[in-house]
Image 1 (tube, rainbow, N blue to C red):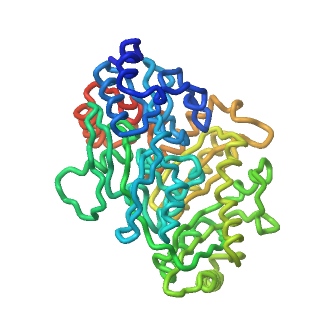
Image 2: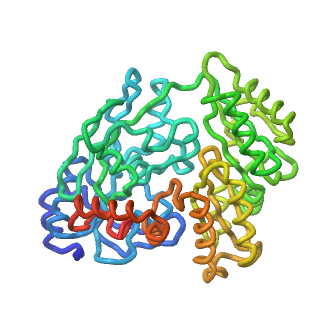
Length: 469
């Protein structure tokens, strides 16, 4: 049984930490972007070193007080906010932002968990390298949170998700001990890999304090194209053709539905769409080339062959880096337009790539039987990850459909599971999807997760209520 923060614990922490580690608990630390969860309170601490994190966790473990790690607050499944239960200690990583080392020879960057993703990208760029994780929230998301949720983003097709981009970690475990697992090694086969336990654990097994991250050579050329496709199946056929022609030069392959463009027009943010009429479906293809290859020419060849095969009906190839960014602005502004419209229920799902067309067709049919909805389906079709968001009809708002919300989610998740997919592709479980994990998760895996949690965190102090029951 966990306890609330007591005067005795405050006294212990006051002796162990400098005064500047104690911060005012403003509403920003008790909210999450979708407005579904609101924290009840707690004690906010912002340590400046791994040693201070260790002191906090050790004291909380001894007092049996919950600890909620807090990164940039951009998570979308409520993992950073506790609505109920005893008042916890919230540990913000905002003061641990150092880039400790950048090594372009080994292609490794070492940073603290509070480093902003954009800062890591910039540090890599300064030495002619790329850290390829790219998210709409990269100006505020922190590396520790990216790791804790195994973030994906738009470049998974080429570079993998956060699990693939991390070589080693430094972390404080639930008893307050520090694991010094920072390493630049690509090969390190010495028993259980704690790195992969902590990545994606959403702070339930410890607090990540620093990481060794992989860097990559910066492509010599970069290009993008918007191509209008006939339907989702044509998008998959175009993806296969792009793989045949361009191989690993394809960095991203994003599916965009007209509903996202309609929302941008309806609510903003103001975004230029380079087609007179919004197409029903289009894809954003992004490439990075080496060896003197011309990205524009490569995309022109791809478009010509796709047109010949009847896969595309129109398209536009970026003629400059500025125009390439305009294309990306369309994709990156869709989530903000979604937020302004207000969804009945949002879903971050993945299905086997070949079953994407079936999912889209069956999902729309099933929801139509429930009621009138607008569906904005978009996402990283190159890796099977769709953001399948359901909205009220125009002129209504999500509050009108609160009674249908759980049924909408059930329809989407049941279909996802039936098609061999995942009910959380890249956002994690947090508190939002704990019940879904219990419903759809493999029993053997769930039992193993619970055993790992009990073994590493017997007092249950780490992010209580998130991921595992």
